[in-house]
Amino acid sequence: MIVAFSVAPSGGPAATEDGSVHGAVAAAVRVVRESGLPNRTSSMFTELEGEWDEVMDVVKRATEAVAPFGTRVSLVLKADIRPGHAGEIDGKVERLEAALDR
Image (cartoon, rainbow, N blue to C red; front, side, top):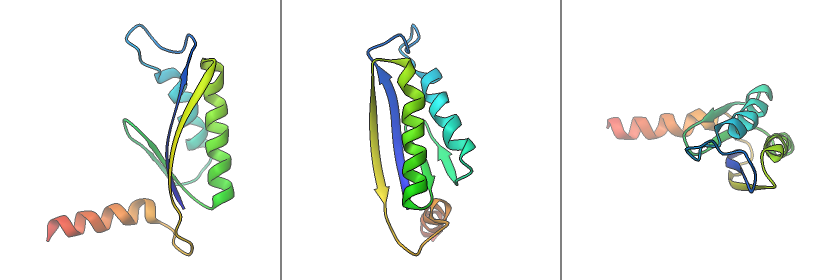
């Protein structure tokens, strides 16, 4: 499965003067990268690929890593559950690029 998720704190001192919560987001992304699962982070979401239990464990730990930065945490999650397929975090993008090149 591939999960795209975004996690951010609110209700606390996490934001910088310009409203950024990059410190909290860095704590979450660190958990994802240390998991060893295929992943990619963009300006809005982090994508993660693996088996259900391992992916959800990483999402949970990433969410917990953000908790100290505020009094509540917001989690947005979208999942592509496709049993029997692996390597889709790159494969889907490669197929899209190939279609655009035609």
